[in-house]
Amino acid sequence: MLDGFPSVEGRGREPLTVDDPRLWPMITESIGHDPRTQHSALAALGPAGLAALALVFASTSGMRGRFDTGVFDGPMGFVAATEGREEPPTAAIWDRHARGGVECHTVDCAHGKMTQPEPLRIIAGIIGKHLDGRPRRMD
Image (tube, rainbow, N blue to C red):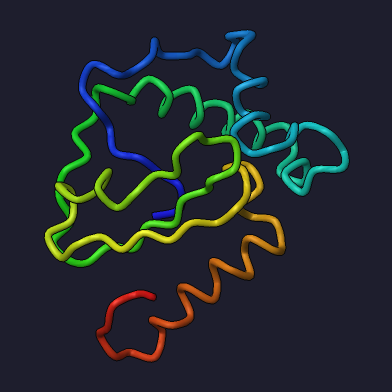
């Protein structure tokens, strides 16, 4: 799980619509830059792709606090961004949602920067340790 969090009943926010003026600033904050600018790799999505991005973001924003996260029947790896957070998230946040336990890793960056080269290098190293096919704990 890459810096995602389970839904908590009663802690949602009002659903957004694609024409809500708060939408693009929220998307920009979430991914760390405005995807509509020519310098964004996401600009290559074109108008239809950006409209789809806005629709997905608006739709999922209304699910917080209303969606049942459920339980995963296996071990889970959780990678949390720590920059800008007073206390880094811990595995406890996901414990009741993974029957095989949760291992938490942190990356010293903001959520919107997790797909930048340096954080991705760290994340790839974490994942790479599990691709040899042998079951083992993440470290």
